[in-house]
Length: 343
Image (cartoon, rainbow, N blue to C red; front, side, top):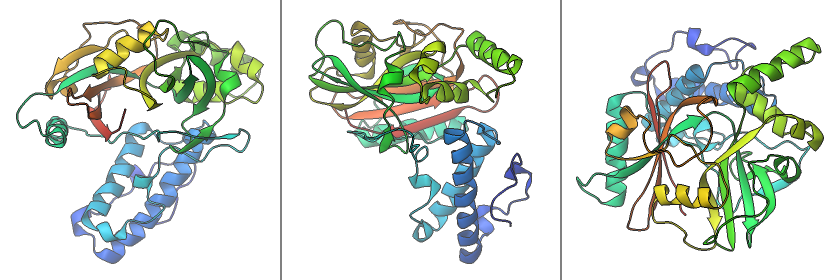
């Protein structure tokens, strides 16, 4: 198999041997190739905002890489895509080391995998057959950002970058009206990193591309890349002119406990002045990951926003926290994801 792909071509068009049939040499050759291919796609997606492969094909590539590594764990290499989050930061921005890494989510593509995901959460929390309470939220496709507040005042804003080191885009994030310069209410810790998504609505994305096309400028492939390109501008006045929005859904480094569950955390974020997903609801059991529907709505991004699926997050009353994301795109197979984290 060739290493790398021509621009614009999906490797899903290749006939791939079943993972079970690979010997060690073939597995190593394919892992080397997949690392190169996925790294190239990450650069086009995260840095150039010009993807050349669909999300579904990209996920299939990563799943194949993970399946090969699971069969040959001794072949996992330092540059494995399974160990990488996002892409290297741009040298145009100062580096920001996240107090707590901004990790990515694994995917599942079937009801069976969603059930197993729920079982893993219960095993991790030692809950036996006790159902886990989840907060189900629509997944809005944008650019992840982390906002650091000290004594209630915004002091720094950063992109996710590679998960450990992001880009300092504080000045740009300050231009978003939905990013509080000072936290409202009370009960917030002295230090807290609020994490959320910078995004564009359907109408705003269409208008942005139409204006760019009329001016003979570059257009964006999708709303996520448009949001990323708009936020990562050297000139903050360009960011300010774009109709970017922000909603909060999580936290990173924090100096003190402020909520016992994800549902309580969303309520706290709302009280502090953040927009949170209005379709969020509290549910129990793995069916939340399989057939989520909107009911309880704290407040937040309008229904016309760019939404690609559902996510669920869960926290245990024992104090340990597990992030769980279940995505059900409007078309195609459902996906469930999970990551362990610490409050």
